[in-house]
Image (cartoon, rainbow, N blue to C red; front, side, top):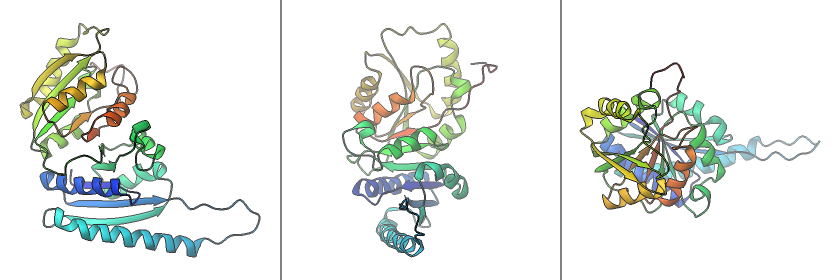
Length: 281
């Protein structure tokens, strides 16, 4: 995780997320943090030609000045040699984020969350939900009450479905390798769900994938999958939860949204590996 992208709307929640990104970058020995703000210019519906070039430049200059101030304030929170860069674009965030990540060789996106509505009304509302849904990179969502401190325990919450076929191994390994923390592997099942006959095979696959990190495994039955994860995290003071949202099945992306809304620690959502029915898993 050498290059981190912090998406910001210049709010307090976003700055807090940037501070957490700096703290995490020290553990991961990241080389670069990019502070990015996307604004979308409103063009009036009129037959009269309207020039917005000067206004756009003024907006961009003001935003860049703010981001440069943030960068100066954050420099003391990263390792020596870690670059903090800034970038602003007149664009709709959800339409440019993946291309931005490719251009800047981003390994992980970091966003602040706050509020009380869906997905705790992330700092840019529904746009943040779109980023969570479409991002090709891992997305780290940081609640405002998150302590800016080293991560010592990590939970990988899994539904034990098609482990080998859909687990994004490269991204997961990169995270676990770069964050020197104790790993808990947690499976929470609903009472109405029965463990499949393939469970032993799925567990074997998971053990093979993660054995180098010497994880501890825990299995739980709970009426509320999200609450089961929250309770486990609180009992063990785990400051970070990793999930792989799925388009189908029990661990659907909606579970991740509920988790972020109710959990008071950061959540990293890693896009699932595309699964082909011809694959074994």
